[in-house]
Length: 503
RNA sequence: GGGGCUGUAGCUCAGUGGUAGAGCAUCUGCCUUUUAAGCAGAGGGUCGAUGGUUCGAGCCCAUCCAGCCUCACCA
Image 1 (tube, rainbow, N blue to C red):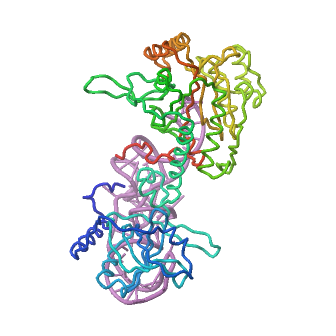
Image 2: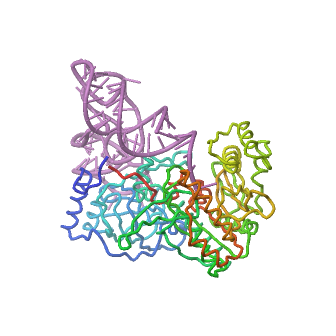
Image 3: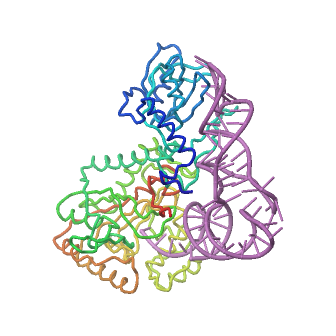
């Protein structure tokens, strides 16, 4: 239903324009400049007692309900802390103001000054002594109605539930569905605690390019753009990794970045084309050290967001108390399938996949086969926080070879509730090895793998100056937020998720 | 990309081939402690779009658009 054009006034909107004009004729400023707010709804309600001396408050918010009864009326206004009832009586406001009040609508934003009292039916309310319009709402707001039934349960009527509209018109979603705001407050707390945790350890927050002449650091297809003045093609970054490690070469002992990455791929419950990633690199550390940091950081973050070591997701309790379980990828597969893959050659791995009914592309190499078996038979069983360690080398072109295990790299991924939450490795700092890995990636690309990494000559050159041993970490902020808030879709933790444009 | 479901008033929805409906919202009147306020009345629709079947389509068929779920692909 197209309602985007102001010219396209339906009856409800036309009516509001008329009211707006009528207010102007009465000399009312329909859009105010400020209001001396000195109270908030939640605090006023919480602090009220019937014994305390009468208190006068100045409060402002959006009108959410209106009950006009001739010469006296009730309304609820909502500010950022919640709703509170306003009582407007002609004899107290004066006829002029009261008539203006009667011209107001649900959605209008008003400022009210008055004393706090309890109504006959028991609701703490503000008895208005003055009232001003701060913003006229010219477009009808689909406000749901609420009722408390005999059992004390809150019943909501006409709730604004259309998912598409909620994502497309997020401001309405925020006004009409209070839990939405809670999710984004939690997201903010999460990021704040993460930043604080990293800052407390002396790591430096930096900013690296979003527009990159070569993209790298992950296996993904990029968005392509063009710079006019230089007349060159640029890519939106798919990861921060290679730039951050350049900074470790440059002498920073620890750097991190929290920023958007962009991947030109499909969208679903777990993927949005732009998403927020935190990446951290710390010199002289390895992936084992990084596991301990991740445990501490996540339990600290969950404490900040949920006030305990527990998060509840889909009725499941997730326990963030360190230490988290550690399990090699091979052992996790053995535990959940009974198949011991360690030491098997490609034919042996394929046979195991067949026994487990895991389908493979013909082109899959040993590492890919192991990864497929893990993804299909293990991943979704990892509910409590579990570090899966030691990945096949061919899947990890930026990770350092395992110090004792042939064919593996020192890498871990943290799984919680069946989802990858963190990815980390001992970073590859040998430029000769790195060059070989890039060469292999280039071979894959030539064979048509458009997600294989590009050969980054400048990065190799930087490594050749010498990079200390380094531990690196990436955490998807959106997925972590989903986990800690129990959200089922990534769109519920992104304020303005990517949507197909309305036609 | 495959399969399933959905799209009707501002919102939430009903409507199985015969004159488009309900509640809330809106408008008019009454109403000075109401709370899904109430009472009386009124207005409001390209039934997602296009084409077809039919004497007749919101309903049946086809195509398209959009959304959700699911599988596949993908970190």
